[in-house]
Length: 566
Image (cartoon, rainbow, N blue to C red; front, side, top):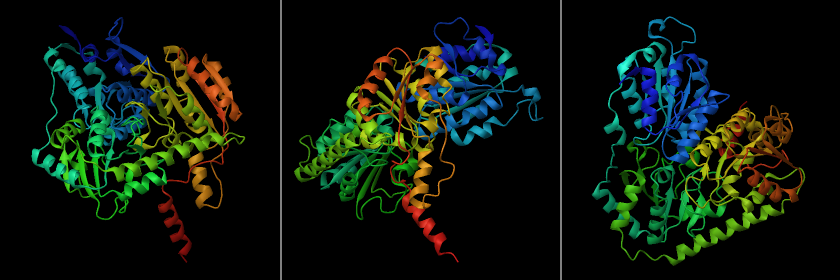
C-alpha cells in the first residue's frame, strides 16, 4: 500500500493501539495529522501548550501501562515539550515524543525554527533518532514506540523532517512486529538462592518497593513475599501505591512524608530487600547512614547499573520485579518464617501513623491549615481514585496523610520535582482510565503554569477534580527562608484570581472553601460534579504551615560554613 511517510507514521501508531496523539498543531508535522483525518481509531487531541501535551502523555503512560504519545512542531514547539519529557524521564514513564523538523535540504544553515532537537532531548530520553529516509519512517516509529517499554520504561524521541514526511513510500507489513510477545528474562538461579538464604536467616527484614513493582504489576507478589517472611513493606518516594494500605504490614513511604516511627523501624532492619527501585536521591539522599551499620542489602533492579551504584549489595539480581519476586516465592519455605516480635513493632508503627493522620482533623485555624484539607479529603476520597500532584509543600502533605488501596493510584512528580505538572498529568490519567475519579492536588503557584489546560479539559470533555491549596505563595521557598534565612522572605508572595470564578469563565465548575467545617462537603460535592465536568476547588490556606525542608542537613551545613568564613 502506497502513502506518504507522514501517513505511514499515523498508520503505524494506529496499528500499535494509540488512540490519541496529544500536542499543538504545527505546519511541519501536518502530514502526520492529515493521516489521522476522518479516522475513528486514532485522533489528534490539541492542548494549549506543548509542555502540557508531554505531561498528559506522561500521565496516560503511567496509568495505562503503555506509551502515551505527544507531538510538536520544530523549534519552539520542541523546546516547550522539554520539561514534560524530563518529568517523564525521571518518573520512568513511557512516552513517545514526536517532533517535526525542518527540511533536510535546509538543515545546518540556521533555517527558520531550526535547532538541534536531538541534542536537546538526548539527556532526557532513552533514545533519540532522526528519520532521514522516508522508507524508514514506519519501521523507526515502531522501534521508537517499543523502546519506551524496553527495560526500564522512559521517553523516546522521534525527529521527522518535513520533506521526509511528504515522500511517497510503500507501507511495510508491520503485523508480526506489532503483535509479537517478548518474555522477561529470568533471574540467575544462584543469585535467587543466595537471596533466599539471607531472607530466611534475617531476624528483622524489610521490603523496600519502588516503581519497578508498579510497572511489572507485582503488588500481589510483594504482599505475598511479605506474608511469607512476616517482613514489613515500605515504598520509595512517590510510590506509596505499591501495596494496599489495608495490608497490615504495609508502612507507607520511606521517602518524603515518612514519620519518625517508620524511619526508626527501618533503621532496626538487619536486611533490606530493595526491589524495583534505584535507591535514588529523592528516597535516600545518598546518605551514608541511610542503612543502619551492618544491614545487609539484596537489590533487585531492571537496570544492572543501579545495583551497587550507591550502596553495596550482598546480593544483586538484575531482573523485572515481578519475575524476580515470583522466583523468590518459589524458593522460600511454603510455611514461611515466623517473626512475631517484628510484626508487633510494625503494628505499633501503623498505630502511630493513624494517630498522626487523625490529629490533622483538629487543625481548625483560619486561613485553612493544608493538613486539615488533606484530612478532609481522606474521608471522602474513593478507593479507586487516582491522585496526581505537583511538587511543593501543600500537595506534598499527600505522603503523610493520604493512603491508597490499589496500584497506579498516585502520580507524583518524582525526581524532577517540577511544579505545574499535576493538572495535565491528571488529564492524561483520565484519558487512560475514564471510569476512575481523578483528583489533582496543586498549589496556587503550580496551577497557573498549565492552568490554560482547563480549556482543553472543557473542550475535550475530560472531567477531573483539581484542588488548589491557595496560600498566595511559593511555599517551598518560603519554608527555606523561614528556617534558614531568619525569615528574610523574598520572591515568595504571588497574586491569584479567585479560582472558582476562573473555572466558571472556562465553562467548568468552581467551588471556594474558606472554613474548615466546609471542607468535607465541598470535596464530596466536587467529586460528584467531577464525574461529568472539570472542577476547580479553591481552598484558601495559610502561608505559614509547611513541613521543614527535606534537605535541611545540607542547608544547615552550608549556612554554618558561610557563617564561619572570615
